[in-house]
Amino acid sequence: MAFELACPNHAPASFVAPQARVALAPFAIRDEATRDLAAREALLDDAFGPARFLKTCQRLRDGSAPAPGLALVAADEDGGFIGTLRLWPVLAGGRAALLLGPLAVAAQARSLGVGGALIRESLARAADLRHRAVLLVGDAPYYARFGFERRFTERLTMPGPVERARFLGLELVDGALSAAQGRVIPASTPALDLPQAA
Image (cartoon, rainbow, N blue to C red):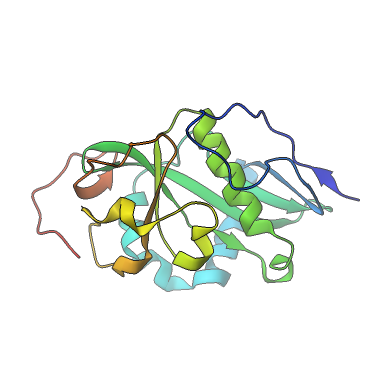
């Protein structure tokens, strides 16, 4: 049995999703629920291990909640938890943006397109919710197919070390990151005068 992923299709004209949001697949994407906590944490542990708590991006997530409507889960035909993705509110050089991640897919489901479906759905929802830009730290060749580019983060810094080639951005609205310069911080935390990390 396949599930249909159906969502409203009214993203701003300046953002064009790399692929259609509606697809047939042996999994469904839904909003994360409280009952998903243990399964999400187990999947993230399997995917990243305990070092995930030491990553620079985690500093931006600590003490925050994901952006409303942008914590997603992929479930298989039997309702099993096979994927997770969350987007977090941040300020990128003083401009409102989202931070994508972590993205994790269960080993048995990695050939099903779950990761790509979660990314496409999250970007489409973010556009529908009128967010203007998304940042991430990840594999550039993988994320390029969704429109993420290094050029959008050239004048931004993270609150800790990251590989510059993996620090990517996507404008959901043209020009959203064009003049963004400075540190990326959690949206709910005031900027601190700290040395900037490369």
